[in-house]
Length: 396
Ligand code: SAH
Image (cartoon, rainbow, N blue to C red; front, side):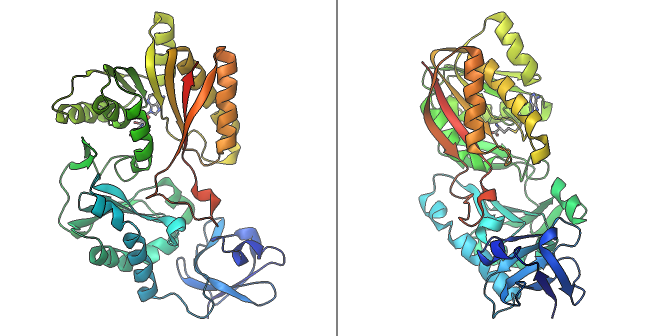
């Protein structure tokens, strides 16, 4: 049997069902496991704690698949995990308000390194770890079996983190028919075109669904500035919510082109829409110098901090854009500001925004806090699963 024994006093977290074993916690390895192989994990005292996937290239050496000591996970077990994860999303199909949501959220759904998203029948998978890659065929056939109306399973395993696992990026069709060039999804009364082959993440920021709804509620008659717009997400939600105008700002030509097409899909949209290709840091300064103001500003930047080491630089970046955005708000205006950097905790994000407000010499109240939606759950034993946080602030 392939077996990993943990160091004394480093077995506590796994014993408490945390899914990660860091390299420093590994005392010894038996049976010469290959990358992705399932290993039995034992405490320093020889107690069997469960089973996990072996990742020799990563600092996270083992990712736990099961805490049941007696049963080694096999294909049937992994198939069952996928089925259970999909079944937990049943309410999304019943409800029908959207046809795009996450089916499998990695560690927090008991499947480390495995992400699967549903876009109107098109299932897109992202396999980030050696263990996820090892179980690829089982995962794909399980998705085919359990996902209603699944037209295909498409692979978007081109995430940067694969390099840390010694894995090459791979993309392409895994099962079913080729997805259309753009998949049309629906969220409430808004349609979005999604490029599952080249789009960010698996194509769309599904994790911001609750925040889009929150922003739409503040949109009636508002002049909205949608920074880091990508394909329009928040701005389209604001249009549907009755905004007077929406200005999208993004550095990507392709993202803005899709934002335009998404706007065209909103037939009855009376909102005046502008699409500005620019660097947000510069554009906010330009609006400040021009004296241009808004009722609602959305700041949803890319991840500024990848690791704890880049945290200081990230904090400066967040403070800079928030300070500038705060100055562009009319009295009573609303700022919806987000951070998807896992290393920036909700507490730290509050502090950064408070400092920005102080320097902007403006007072704000917190109206709402947002998180990733319930299709992106966070296992209670895995706080690292919380990465997305947002504040909806009102200038008083
Ligand atoms: N708010 C979007 C997601 C944002 S993703 C949504 O809800 O769908 C981050 C976006 O920021 C990307 O589209 C990227 O092109 C853009 N971006 C990154 N750095 C930028 C910068 N300095 N200025 C403008 N856009 C930038």
